[in-house]
Length: 262
Image (cartoon, rainbow, N blue to C red; front, top):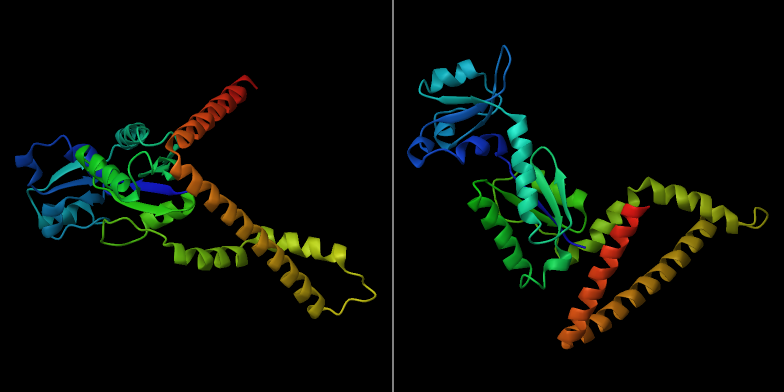
């Protein structure tokens, strides 16, 4: 699976700016919180050039830029805009999930072939959201949580963040070591195969761990080799690929209908 996270980092500002005339867009503009001591939430380039920053008191911002145009943040408009972007993304994949307050997740692994590869698909996502009037940050990862974390990571580049294949083993190792469920499972699983009268402590556990690792590696490599062989044959027969895609679609539709009925 491959998940894309399309984050709209300046959504509070964009819901106003996208409806602003070009001449007005050049003026210092910012969105602020409400209340007795409002603070700046987002500011456009002209306002930032005047020294206005997020978290700044509105009074301080006005002292830096007396001609600053201010709008109070509207969470309802942001939610509606995020939902509209999610609906727009369904043209690329049906697996689209909102990640409030400023991101949309989409599983695009099954859409790569339809849209001529990863590079073209991500370009369409980024350009399309930009054409809708939103600044974007796109991140890719094998899981939705990882994609969301990468998209929300601090950075000045707007280019997609990708996990390269050579990083999978390292990422999997860290996830496994830090996964409490796996640790608890093996703590409960290993004692079932240990004779209290004959075990040798750490060497016994090490031997069992090595055995499981070898069996798991052999099983996963077998699955990878089988999937690779099937994929090669499917790529060589486009008609077969189309029928498999249709069969999968019918299965998913049937599964959805069954969920609704149950």
